[in-house]
Amino acid sequence: MTEKNFIPSSYSSIIKEGNVTWQAPSNIALVKYWGKKEHQIPANPSVSLTLSNCATTTTLNYTKKNVETADFSFELWFEGQPKESFKPKIVKFFERILAYMPFLKAYHLKIETSNSFPHSSGIASSASGMSALALCLMSMEKELNPEMTDDYFYQKASFLARLGSGSACRSVKGSIVAWGNHQNTKGSSDLFGIEYPYTVHKKFKNYQDTILLVDKGQKQVSSTVGHDLMHNHAYAAARFKQAHENLSRLQDIFQEGNLEGFIEVVESEALTLHAMMMTSLPYFILMKPNTLQIINKIWEFRKATQIPICFTLDAGANVHVLYPEEVKAEVLQFIKSELVEFCENNQYICDKIGSGAKKI
Ligand code: DP6
Image (tube, rainbow, N blue to C red; front, side, top):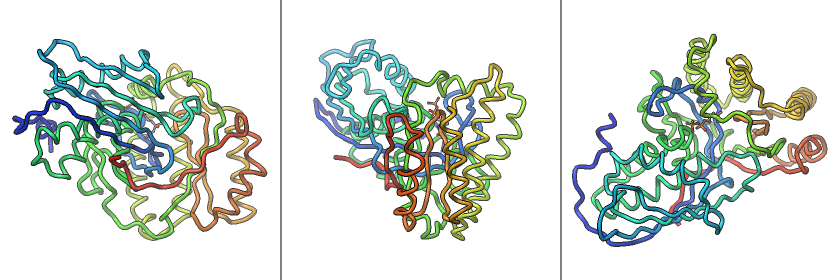
């Protein structure tokens, strides 16, 4: 598979107008994507759990223009209001995908989008948002080319989503998705995410993710800037090698249902991600004092109870608490009694592993 596979040759149908709605989930990486090359090619492979409740719903209305214009013509609505500030990111996305979606400038688009989670939660909506938009555009392309197979549809949706935001390519399918060339993962690609192709033990079925909202403010350093700082980073080569190894380790862990091994890989990945930030030049810290309080509490609780809970972090201060469904009652009790006090306005979101995006 190369980029060329996603350039359409011609379309068999003509459509004047239509609309489509997709709901796409967020995802949480177990092995982190941190560092990229040109054209949104990841510096290392990653793997994530697709979530279920944290999602973006996007409706795309399209109307054929009388004459094709040089610019993209679109409106953007966020939670019922026009949102000019999101437009530059969408223009950049359209520019990146134009070669693969040559019909884009022939239509006027109305994009209406909303998130299931509060906008100011500190939860990144770029993964679910770009995935939902990419899927809407693919539905439009399928109208133009009805012979398209489902495999191609989802692969190209992930390919396009990646060009919007790297981690978005892991927000199309469920329930575990791998992205990035990895020698030991068959079918893996730098260009799109794939459904995890190996056996996953039933212990991971319905795995829970409770997201503790430690800091709902705007991040001081964007992921894009953070990725960039991995160029010429003193530890980059070792980090990229480690990600490959961790992906291989997870293969046995998933198969055997080895929760101890899972905890070790996942927590090490989270801390390594933040260690990369702290050792970048310029260096930065996205964790907050309460992030560390929570991590220590989780370690104490795990030691005292032997309940296999662990944490992971994304590029921010919030903590994702991961645990098997069978210990849900005890863990939620622990979260309420000992962790909620470290969350901004005592807020947290209960989520779990999900099955991927849905057309509505
Ligand atoms: C820390 O996908 O947000 O969440 O490709 O620049 O849009 P861009 O970056 P983004 O990076 C996500 C980084 C991460 C780890 C991960 O999700 O794998």
